[in-house]
Amino acid sequence: MGRRSHYAITKVSADLPAALVQQLDGWKGEIQGINRSRLISDLLRWALDRGAVDELYPECEFDHKHADAEADCGCHCVTC
Image 1 (cartoon, helix red, strand yellow):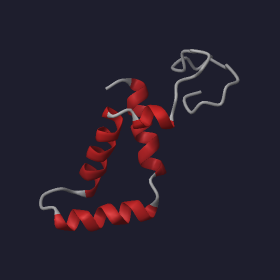
Image 2 (spheres, one colour):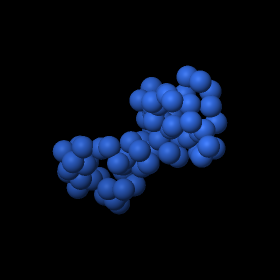
Image 3 (cartoon, one colour):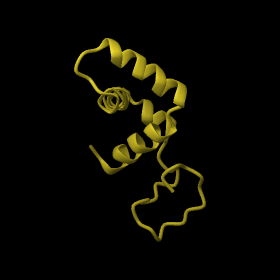
Image 4 (tube, one colour):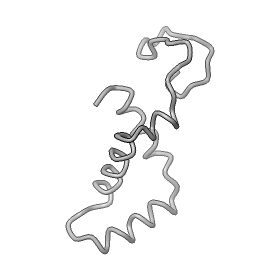
């Protein structure tokens, strides 16, 4: 998994509403052997594989290297 994908998964899981987490907890009770963090991780990976994260967090339109702390492009994408 790339650095951008790892960042997006971290960002999306931090943005999950409490109600969704509670709903996932309820489902977990019906699924033997799966804990909450594993279930959320699996769902996020499934979404990532289908491009959902790229739609929520698009790359910088200026094609800057956001891993570089010196990059100040002035855009407002999540990775800047």
